[in-house]
Image (cartoon, rainbow over all chains, first blue to last red; front, side, top):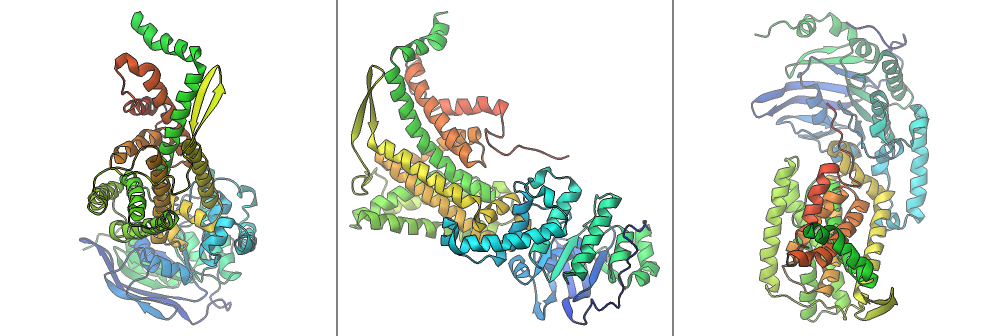
Length: 275
Length: 318
């Protein structure tokens, strides 16, 4: 397993962050593309306030799982219960309106826009002024723009990216792009934040920063987090519970310690042949 | 030697000899350039927000103009007819999104391009059924558009400016300014640019692609309607306009597929250069070179700036 990269502030399970309320429950989900079974009968839940990790080797179905949760993919079987409403499939718009925000494995920013505009786009659903005022750019639209800008500035401060406000994001180094993407997601004030490999391609220092932001978002903003990550140090440090997928199937689910000791997990990572 | 002189020296001596004539030719080119630019603008709007090259943009121009004339023939007052036509363009946008685009989400762009060719063919057939195939006259006077001519004494000669051409320039400028403001800072503008950059990311922040597509097709429809009125006022309203609309292609190659200023400047360059070429170099080969000069200019241009004057730089990360 990799080195520990975060400060030794091990997430304690019993600090009152996590409530008993199950905010997301994925029930017996199966997803296939033609003959390829991406996910097979996977069930798990996420409790309000926790940091939930999904790990597994490449091609295990982790990203497909996130895509089902926020409605990009529609599983052929199973239900997704979010905030008490069971659905056969999510829709991206419903997911966004109901407070699910996400980041992407390969940074998906609006490359032509500045950091500020990228993060402002996270407020899309919260802005209500109608087209008429927007055309005129005064009245309600202007007030609204200012009010949301204030919130965005808070997020910018939170992520310590004040100095790249005006920079087109296409020009930023990769690590900062990932941070801006996290900013855009946090600006939505999400209940559930889905992070797809937030540390991929980062150096040690960047990983440490990112871990800190995730912990702060979870502890200070009260955001529930579900994250996919390959860096085991990060996963074991940050998460309260870990779901392990391999070849689309769930092979373990439990606390970081339990999962680490699980023989099936060790086999999957060391590449024991599948029958 | 004689030939080289004819190509490289003769025309310029002619230009210097009669500057008033040169101004007249450039002005004619400028006005056609504006119309090319407006057609290209329609393409750019849709391409920016959806990555679709809308082959049917040209026919939308014809369709808009025909609807206007057709409604007026039925006895609808001119300005009410304009408002109804805006409504028709909106219905067209919603229908295109619902029937053509939505079932093809996530398909390769070439499939969507093919779909717009289908839309093009459909609109031609549908338009001919409803309005008939014969050319019609635009209701210029009824719309309150000016029809006179002003002759200006300058450079030792006379240059005439058609009032309708001046009106076209002013209206085009106003429309571009409105679009630029709208696309720049408003929430919708930001959403449009977001969709243009990344569909999935846009969806993840709660932007609905369908809504954005209706908005851009509607905007492109209004641009098409205005272009149709202006163009119809200069010649007549017929399906031949659809061929002319293909001139937007070299304009787009010059200006870049994603740039609104590019469409304007590209349109003007193409308009002016084709008129100059026709007037000064055309007689050498018996005329009618304005139909292919723009494409020739575009081909030369492709060697040097394949992304266009203002297009986003093509950066492929490997």
